[in-house]
Amino acid sequence: MPNHQRLRHFITSFSALLARERAEEAILREGAVLLGDLVAVDDWLPEAYAEPDPERYRQYLLHVDSAQRFSVVSFVWGPGQQTPVHDHTVWGLIGMLRGSEYSQSYRREGGDGKGALAPHGEPIQLTPGMVEPISPNLEGLDDIHRVRNAYADQVSISVHVYGANIGAVHRSVYQPDGTRKAFISGYSNTTLPNIWDLSKETKTT
Image (cartoon, rainbow, N blue to C red; front, side, top):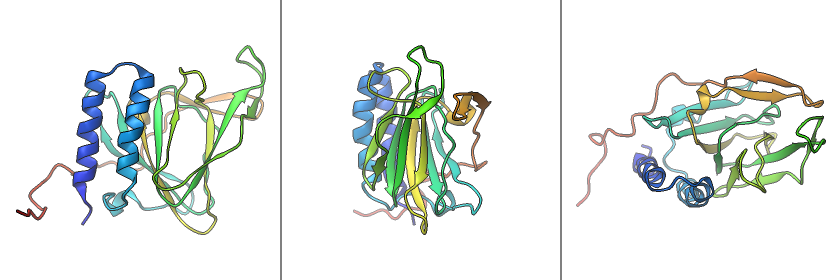
């Protein structure tokens, strides 16, 4: 049985963080510690939210804040699967739970925010326990990237936290010439895991 206590603790701790802190830099710094603790142990994600799809990666909603201040999502990558180049428009944290993935940042070649997109820096390989921040607002961080499973023969899973209900956010995917196409990602699931039900958990004294 998944250890729901870990996810419950993360959600309540992250809610408390947002209640006391509004500066994005501090949210990402302190939130990365909380997410790092969550993905350091792989015993809490329900199997229904870790199922791969043979055709494309899946994006399962695990929690959305009632005020939509943040959402928690599991990304499940089948062997060799990857995203298109895309943005988020809000801050985010990516924590690696299982397997490994590469995140490649992109930036406009023109200094005016226009022109073709080109890879910026080397791909970052995330392994279990690692956390990467993304932001459209903070200097030194990028918001446009492509993510792919590092493995061609196994499933990888990462846990993402965003500063909005990310499945409802208007975002963009990008062609190599920088052309944008609007999209709303939605989610692969229509029900949330009931992590708040304590009645089925064994209590110890």
